[in-house]
Amino acid sequence: MRRNRRVKIVATLGPASAAPEMVERLFMAGVDVFRINMSHSTHDGSKTLYNTVRACAARHRHPIGILADLQGPKFRVGNFEAGRVSVPTNSIFTFDRDETPGTPNHVHLPHPQIFDAIQPGHMLVLDDGKLRMRVIEASHAQIKAEVTTGGILASRKGISMPDTLLAISPLTEKDKADLAHALKLGVDWVALSFVQRAEDVHEVRRLIGNRAAIMSKIEKPSAVLALEEVIAASDAIMVARGDLGVEMPVEKVPGIQKKITRLSRAAGKPVIVATQMLESMISSPMPTRAEVSDVATAVFDGADAIMLSAESAVGQFPVEAIQMMDKIAIEVEQDPVYEPMLYATQTEPLPTGADAIAAAASAIADTVKLGAIICYTATGSTVLRVTRERPGIPVIGLTPIEATARRLALVWGVHTILTGDPENLSHMVRKACRIAFEEGLVKAREGILITAGIPLGSPGATNMIRIAFIDDSGAPIAEEV
Picture 1: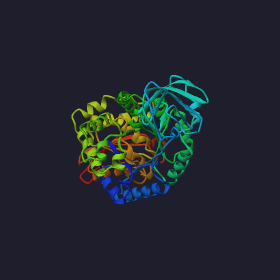
Picture 2 (picture 1 turned 90 degrees about the horizontal axis):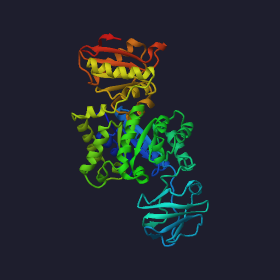
Picture 3 (picture 1 turned 135 degrees about the vertical axis):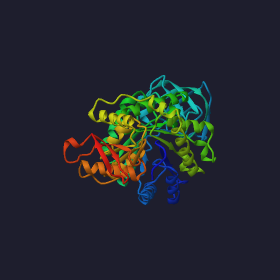
Picture 4 (picture 1 turned 180 degrees about the horizontal axis):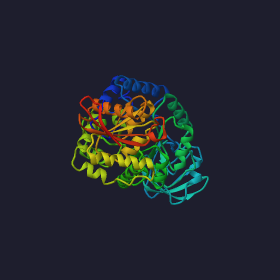
C-alpha cells in the first residue's frame, strides 16, 4: 500500500483504538506508525498492542512502525490537609522537606534533587502552568517563592522547573523496566522524555545499542539551548509542544517548532510535530479551522511526521481524525506554494562522500526528469541522506532487513519495500526497474535513479548512482553511470 502523501502520520493507541479491528481501520485511514504511551500502558497491555500492530502489518505485507514513548521523571507536590488550597497572587509560598500535610502557606516537596539544584530567580510552574512562582530563597531544607500567578493548588499536582538543570537521569526505575520490556517486544523507536542535554541521549544509547532508534522529545528549555547537540546525539526528534508550552512562554513555541524542524532537517534526522494538532476532534467529528492550519504549517515546513495523541487514543472519532489529517496533508502537498516553501529551508550537503552522492542523486533526478529514486539500504542511512534533500519525485527504499523497513515508516516521502539482497549490480538495476514499474511509480520509457548503500561483494559497489530507463515489461532498456 503506497500513500498519496509524503509526510507520515503517527497515531497513539489507547482505549478508543486498541481493538484489532480499530487498528486495521486506522492503518487503512492512513497511519504509518503507531505510538504506545508507556505512561498509560501496562506491560501486558503494550504486548497486546504490539502484537495487534504486527499482525496488521503481516496481513497487508506493509511495514508499520511502532514507537514506545517512555514516561520520564515526574515531579509532584505533596498532600494538603484540606485536599486543595487557594494560593493568592503576590503571596509567599514555601516548599519544604516536612512530610506533614500542607497548608495554604506551604507544602511538602518530595524531590531532594530540586532542593539541590534550584536557585533564586528560577521559576516554578505548577499544575500544567495554572500557577507560577519565582524563587526568592533556596536551601537544602526549603524553597521560598513569590506567587506571580495564583490559583487553586491541589494535592499531588505536577511541578516543573523550566530554568533549573537537574542532575538526574532521564530514566526512572519505571522507565528502565518499560524500556527493557519494549526492547524485548521489538519496538522500532523509543521516545525519550525529559531530555535536558545530549549526554541524556548517550546514556540511553548505551542501554539500547542498536536494538531500537532513539527519538528525543524536545520539551525542556535546557534541551532547546543544547538543540544542535541533542539532535546530533539522536536518531529523530519530536517537537513535544504540550510540555514545551508549559515550561516556556506559549508565544515562543511556534518559533521554536520551526527552529527544531529546520535544524533536524539540516542534520538529516526525522522530525515529528506533536500535541494538540486536532485536539477538538477528541469530542467533535470536525476540527477547528485553527487546527487545520496548525497541521498544514507542519507539513509546509517539511516535517517528516505529524502525530495524534488523545485524538486517537481516547477520542470519540479516531478514524475521522486520521482521515482529516491525511486529507490536510495531501491538500498541502498539492498546493503550488508547497515546494517553494519546502526548499526555502534546504541546506548544503554535509562534507562527506555519502552526503554528496545523495545530494547529487536528487539534483540528477530533477535535471533528467526521472520518475523515481530507488535506494537500496541496509541501515536506512542511504534513504535518510536522500530524503534530507526532499526530492520532488517518489523515493522507494529497498531493504532486506525488516527492522530497517519498519523504522523508515517514519521518514518523509519514503515507500519502503522488504526485498532480498541483490546478487550483483546488474541484478540490482533489474530489480529496481521491476519494482518501480509494478508499484506504478514510472511508466514505460521513463527513467529511475538507483543509489545503494549496501555491499555487493566489493567496496566499489556502495554509494553508487545508476540511471536506468524502462521498457514495456518493466525491464531496463539502458543504463547510465
